[in-house]
View 1 (cartoon, rainbow, N blue to C red):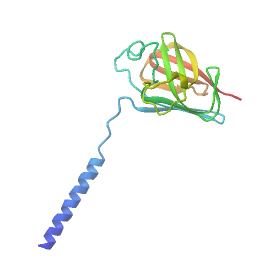
View 2: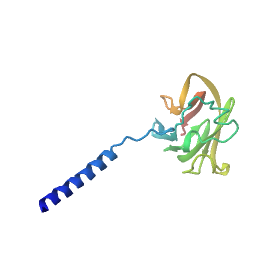
View 3: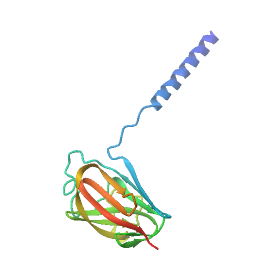
View 4: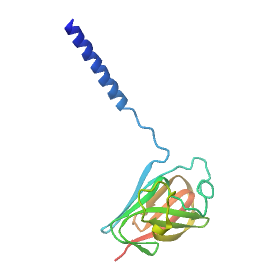
Length: 178
């Protein structure tokens, strides 16, 4: 009788363990705006941009989903953040090494790209222009292909930060300051 109780308790424990193991192996659902990273290296300088990448999904992006003339978080979810290990010239203006939130004010024909000292922000809801470290204007251009996800990337030489979504592209020159 004691042996049967032991076997039953052991079988029950084994079933609970296997059930937990099976549940732990369940695949995660993909996020609608997954985290993405863009990085570049020039000499000793390293730049990393962390952002969430929303998708177009048959929506009109600029002038629709992302209104013209308003601050935008450059992606989705948390505000985009950029980390620089060296002082850089961005769009011809100096930006000191450090970590910044990035925002933009898209307009038809140009964007104002903003580097802000506030970190850990959700979206652009608490954006404070008094904390801006740098603002750079950059022209927009039309792309030959449609970018389904919002994308931030650097060219191969690391001299241009490129932001593209839908059929719009913005290129900001980047270089290490001496």
